[in-house]
Image (tube, rainbow, N blue to C red; front, side, top):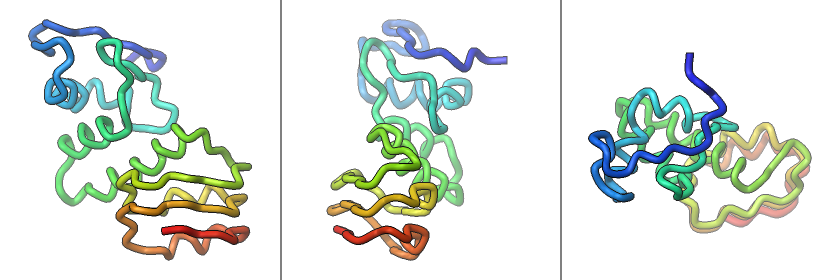
Length: 142
């Protein structure tokens, strides 16, 4: 069983990570099936790789490269979940501002029933249907 509280890993200049902190090496390392469990869910424990924060983009790229094409919706959903977590959103959050973050799917917003203001300008939103789950929404910017 894996240690689910692992927060930081340093692996530079090893066979699994041949550089100091090259971007391609980071994605390659993160997409390993054993590492993915530490980054691909809400409240994921692994936050740092080689003393640099693991970004939402890196997590989504690694997951996307590890999945089949038909699982692309999983990555789209996870992106919003991770961004909301990074933003510090909770069930009582009233305003969410995530412009220009490559968000395509809004389905994960259903948990945030108290949201009144939503700024998603400059994203890749394909459907506004999930917004029906936000009964208090009074301002929307897409």
